[in-house]
Image 1 (cartoon, one colour):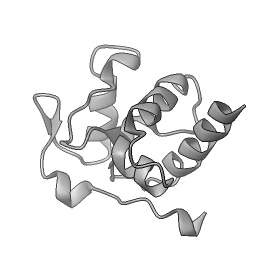
Image 2 (image 1 turned 180 degrees about the horizontal axis):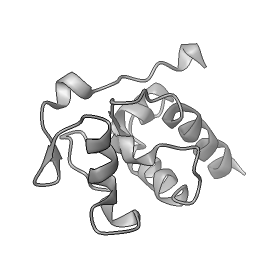
Image 3 (image 1 turned 90 degrees about the vertical axis):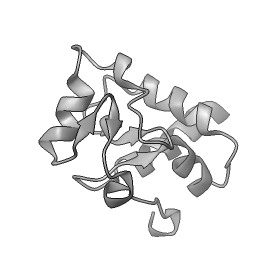
Length: 109
């Protein structure tokens, strides 16, 4: 199934996001050569909420907003996970996004 293959490719990139870094749905989509599929990346991240090996909390929207936080158990789990990695979050948005942003590179996969 094409969707499953796409999701697995998303997960392969998400697994590479370094500790203390974040990336965006759009950056993952662009790395996959499907720049207009940021929403599908979001669907993939939503579908992986029970997969412990995928750091879904490190994927945010292009402005650094924690748009996926509703898919985590607890009220502030996504924020707590990011803060435990040294990332400051205020009003559901990452402070100093440029400092923490990681750009995926599929050539290393």
